[in-house]
Length: 201
Image (cartoon, rainbow, N blue to C red; front, side):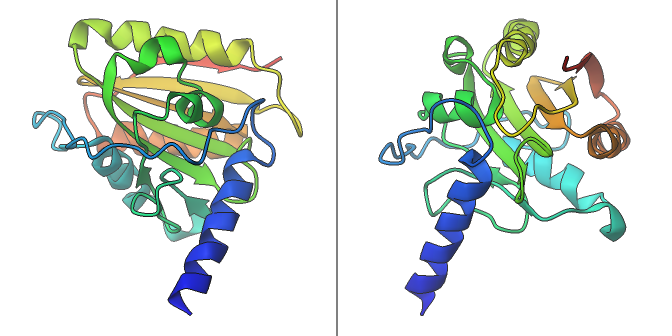
């Protein structure tokens, strides 16, 4: 029975991540490695998934939506909130979260949070940048990558990118949901800086 539930949850994750998402599906056979979660202590978190979880936990119940996180590694999947995303899956980081392969080498930890019904409604990612000098590079690369994307099932309305210490946090989707996310980020992390806010044409 447990195995059947796990298979159903996996199928649901695949649908939520890729049904209305970007051009190429990540290769599900790529298994992320067991890289220890890095991070900084000055913002009170030690991993990307902990950062997103703090934001998600700050939501009022009426503002929450059906959400899931993680990647295709069963250990990383979370059907109730943010989950760890393996940094070795560079195709998945690009297709699902909008982080281009050129920037994947600049991070060593990632996490995701997606709307379970349609990834274009809300997709959020958090990335730990190994060298703080590259934080702006990673943020700008996400903006440029998503600006050139050919969207299926309608495009998201807005993109926001924050820097929080040596983390980059991005989210795209419907304006009202993104506005709630923005509020929750800045109220959760005093050092959060909104560096990009762009609407999609």
